[in-house]
Length: 501
Image (cartoon, rainbow, N blue to C red; front, side, top):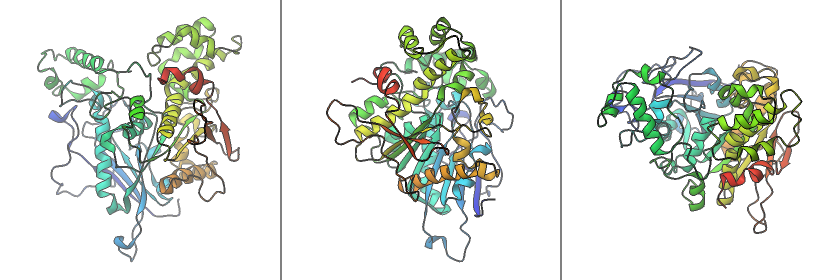
C-alpha cells in the first residue's frame, strides 16, 4: 500500500491507570514494568467520553500511546542505523472527545516519509480538567498526561528508531491548544524542538479568563452536590468513588485550559511579554479558510438560520466564548457590505466572526507574538483554502460551509494515499511539508520554492506593524504567498481585544 514496511505498536501504556485515588490527579509513572507481554497489535481503551459513534471502547484506564516507525529489520544492528525524526501528535475534540484509536489518526502514511510517529491519549472532560482546589486535583491534568507521554517518548523512542532530541509536537483544534500549552509551559521545556499548530491556540481575551479558578472550583462543587457529594471537606474524595458514567453524563462543567496552574502559570500574553515560555523552538502554524462554519453549526445550530441584523446581534449575546465584545460594534463590522436580503449571507457573516474570534485570530496572533518576541527562531504560517469533495463530509462539512475546521486532517495523515483516492498527490505534498518541517524546519525542502517567515523581525520601523506573509495551501494555486491577510480583522478590529499594547 505504501511501498515501505512500517512497524506499528498499538496501545503502549505510559502511566499507571488514573483510577480510584488517582482520578483527577496528575498521572503517575508506571512503578514496575509489567511481567506480561503487551499485545501491541490490538487497540486498547480510549478515554471516557460521550462517543456518539459507539466505535470506541472507553474506560478510565486509557493512558496509552501508539507508535509507527519505519521497519528496522535488516542485517545491521539498530545501533548502526541513523535515528529518525519524531512527530508527536495530540488529537482535538474540545478537550472532551477524541482518541488515538480513531483510524483517521493512524500514522503509517506519515511514517512512510521516514519519521517515527507517536500519538497519545489524554484524559478528557471532567476526568482531565476538573479543578478541585488542592494538589490532588490541580486542574489541567489532561495536559500533564500529554507531558508524561512526551517524557516517555523522550526516554524510550530510541528503541523504536527515533531520535529523542528531534521531536516535533503537532495537533489540531484542542490538540493545537495543547501544543500551544506546551510552548507556554515551563514543565515542557526542552522536550521538543519544533511545534505545528493546526487551527487553535490558547490566546483568548487579554483581560478576562475564559475559565477562572474560582469559577472552575464552584462548578466542580456544584457537580459534586448533584452527585450526592455534599460534605464540604470530603466532596472530592466522594467524587473519586462516584461511578464514572455518572460523572460522564454530567455536562454542565466548563472544560477549558486554566491559568494559574502548575502547567499554565500565566497567560500567553503575559508569557510573551516576560519571556517565560519555550523560546528554543521553531513554529509552523495555520488555519482553514472557513474556521467558524462547522464549529458554530455544532455549538450554536440556531446560527444556521440568521436572517437580519437583529438576528445577528441577538446571536452574539448567546455566545459564551466571546465575552466582553460590544455587540453593536461587532454587528457593524461584520455586516458591513453584507446584503442581508441574500439567503445565508447573515449566517456566513456570523460564521466568519465566530471563526475569527475562536480559532483564526488566536492562532495567528499566538504565532505572531512568538515571532516578534523570539526573533532568532523561524515562524511560518499558512491558510488552507482547498475544499475537498471527498473528505469534507468526514466531519460533517457541507459545500455551503466552505473549507471547514479539521479539513486538513485527512491530508496530513495521508487518507487519500491509504485509500487510493483521487487526491493522493496533494496529500503526498502536504505530508512532505509536515515531515520536512519535522526533519529540518524547512517545509519546502526540495521543491524549489520558499516559505517566507510570518514576519521579518528586523528592518521594520518602530511603531509600524511588520508585513505578514502567509502561505496559501491549495493544490490548484502554485506557491501563492498572501501579504497582510488579517490586516482588517486580527491585526485591526479585534487586535485590542487580544492584546494590551
